[in-house]
Length: 352
Image (cartoon, rainbow, N blue to C red; front, side, top):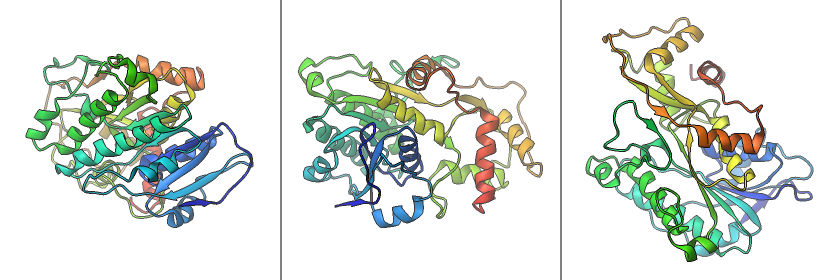
């Protein structure tokens, strides 16, 4: 089952990354190794992963990197328990970075069952395990919120029934995954303990909610996913060509998002949801910043005079987590830095 390729004395402990070859999971793996953890990576093809990511996943002499074969059934049925039980042996943290972005009802079963399977295995372990789920801001859209209100992690929840009725199965899956995961650890949506018995024996649960994730993709293969290929099309003048949207987008660099995941393991008080965004910028500002870095880029026409308010986030919980884990000096990349590294990556990988 497990493929070893670097051995040594243990370091800060072993972290399991489920979906270690994805856009986020590969960067979480890299960040964990950089922070001194050993990693057990679970993915569909361990042999291929070793070849693709060997240059990015650097072990020191006191670290191990093991790769194990694992795939969640796309129909949403649960993974056999014994498979995950073996994978969580001796780990201190589990990062659930798998995604299923198809807008179809099976996406809901896939995300919910993947998260609950991981939590069940972690609960059975003799170790105290932290579980970190990668979700999205799609679960944080409160239907009755006033325009311009400041979003926080506790009160801002999407309505999964309305999401499903509108055919938005991917965001509904993330919303329901979070609700069911919190229920499993004995907590409500505000992350308050409501079932003492469940909470006492449950893993510590953290949830990360990103929106548009940009930056360097560690996988040298063809560019996949939703956000990064879409952004590449915008920069190439193949998308968002008719007009500047009178709207905003919340963005983070994938390497910073990975550090936010790792912070949840490093800070023993971390719990509940954390916004995985730097902030929201207007599309007018984003496209102007693109133009500054790609002089040949043509900004589409602006057909509005009054700008709609950008989405606002209360980032105090996120900032407290990063300070606790990494100190005052750690700073998230700003818009120009995020766009710079993304455009550099797109050029170097032949996608621009």
